[in-house]
Length: 241
Figure (tube, one colour):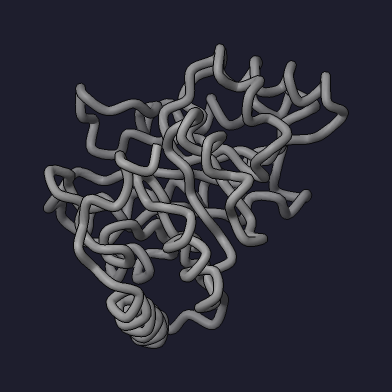
């Protein structure tokens, strides 16, 4: 596994500098937006070695995002204590491997997947927090439900007793206008008002924004931003996350 990781040349000092810069940018974006709540910085750890992940945790990051089931299973025992969310595409036959090892699954994009998560969570006697993934750019190559499906999809998830919908996640198209973020913010607010959720206070998470657009995401209400290359450096041959 190690030879597949960290094909970048950033040092620990680079990671520290990136972290300080990102925190400052978040604070400035929140101030400009008049926000008085909080935004969690998630370190996206795909292809990043455990020693660099642990260094990020030492700096103050307490939330990690994993994209690949097997890579996470290979690395998890080497991690310093931190909360872990699964953020990548998830096949139903892989749910059983992570259901008791992560605290939230961001990438729920079908009823079939939601039902499998619910079934596996019931087997472990837990309730799994999830986010509904929205394909806000309506891109054929991306997963996620359409904006038009969000309210019906989210309302139906309330029937599953071993999952708890916490909000929405999206990956806007590269270079998209702020309209994508504004529409996600509007959808998020609409889900909060659904009869099945409005009195429970559980819809509190809007996961959007990556290395290239997180300040815009903060402007439009993101509560989790997912930073990979902006923190750890670009991995050669990979697009920024």
